[in-house]
Amino acid sequence: MSNIVSIFDTTLRDGEQSPGCSMNSREKLIMAKQLQKLGVDIIEAGFPASSPGDFESVQQIGLELNGPKVVALCRADDADIDAGIKSLKGSFNWGIHTFIATSDLHLKSKLGIDRKTAIKKAVRAVERAKKHTDHVEFSAEDATRSDPDFLVQIFSAVVKSGATVLNVPDTVGYTTPAEFRDLIIKLTNEVYNADKVVFSVHCHNDLGLAVANSLAAIEVGARQVECTMNGIGERAGNASLEEIVMALKVRNQHYNVSTNIHTEQIFQSSRLLTKLTGTVIQANKAIVGANAFAHEAGIHQAGVLKNALTYEIMSPESVGVSVNQLVLGKHSGRAALMGKINSLGYDLTDKELSSIFKKFKKLADKKKIVYDEDLEVLVMEERSTGIEKYKLISVNVTSGTETIPTATVILSISGKQMPPKAAMGDGPVDAAFNTIRGIVNIPCVLTAFVIKAVTGGTDAQGTVSVSIEWEGIRATGRGSHTDIVIASARAFINALNRLDLFLQTKPIDGEDQEEMAGI
Image 1 (cartoon, rainbow, N blue to C red):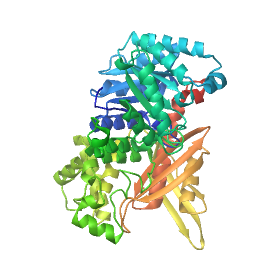
Image 2 (cartoon, one colour):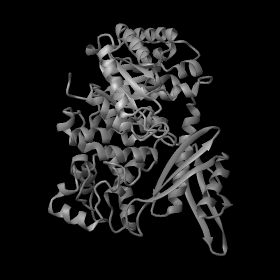
Image 3 (cartoon, rainbow, N blue to C red):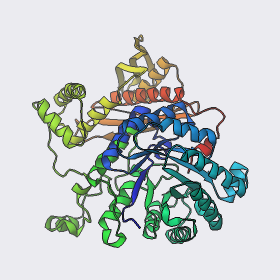
Image 4 (tube, helix red, strand yellow):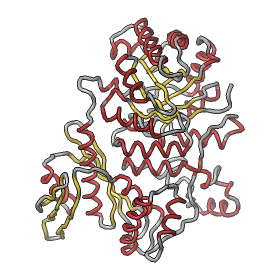
């Protein structure tokens, strides 16, 4: 048995389905390239049959990447399999991941079929995919609530049909480590040609056991783990990539397995995802949280100063957290800026550097010191720009204890500058949002609004994340500026642009969206 555990990253598929974590095709490609740099073995790029936008995104990622295997998720359905093949055929390294529900609950209530039909559909899907690629993974959705003997039966059938990876999903986060161990042991002992296929696990975190269950499965023979960066995903999320990888590294003598992950890229990957999605991870998040390597208690501080191992089981550097920050100011030149950005893990084109350098100089005039976090914001803003329908030209507000907050906004829509418009609100930010809504004529609902200081100090940039919803579609947006009202307006405009993209690539009409969610 191999002592290497393959990391199957589904951030761009299962993770991206998490409310508020949607990404457009450009953002998905940026994240995919970082996952390649991180060293993941397999990237699940999306669900090609779900929408034209997802199809194009999977296709683009497959063509652009030349390292990790890129796979597409497909239901056990001819049209899905064909869409997956069409999206990835011609890519450097690709495969198909197909699934069908196996629990009696799902078979009866969701699919309306019996076990015999499920096996037939699974076999047909695997055989259809196998004609075009050697890498075919089969997943038994809701496996942990399925009859174990039926799992043996359906897994054996797909192995005979050409499946090379068998995935055992804990789709609703129901199982426990002990139960999951027993299930994996049974499957690895009883499935046909079990020693010739790779057993994989995909655990959800509804009871907070996703990582524990994944590690329990690894102990008894699973050699692929499906996980996401920061643990994002449906409902309570997926097993967290960084937690699994560092558990296997720090406790290597216990697990006696390793991964191909370049752990020094973990923190960069985590930060990139939060900036692309606009989501914020809690400060006490293991490995990548702001407090993961912070020590406030005096006895802890004293111990760490004498020997870091007293309270740190891994070094900050091992996951890419920089302990020494080189700060830049208004007198810093292009070379210093480029060097610092490179040290943060970003590779810039000359065009990107020129644009960021101009923004850096403007920011440096407002702030005494420009920190790493400030530079990351500039990079992400530069890389998130593209063909945008709405652009903020200016926003001006009046507000005070005896003044009704009013905002005057000028926007550009599809390249045409609109006349100024004003509206009132409960506060300056609310007034700005009301004005923007009036200009674009989209009565969207604001469902989330989060402000976070990028660095300390009264001159810090503020990063605003918003979530809006309209016609059943939710989009997130983010914006940064030293003026929080401007940052808020930018975030709202960013969300509207993302909403416009999602409206253009809505899922195919008539599809069962619950089933689209996958495993």
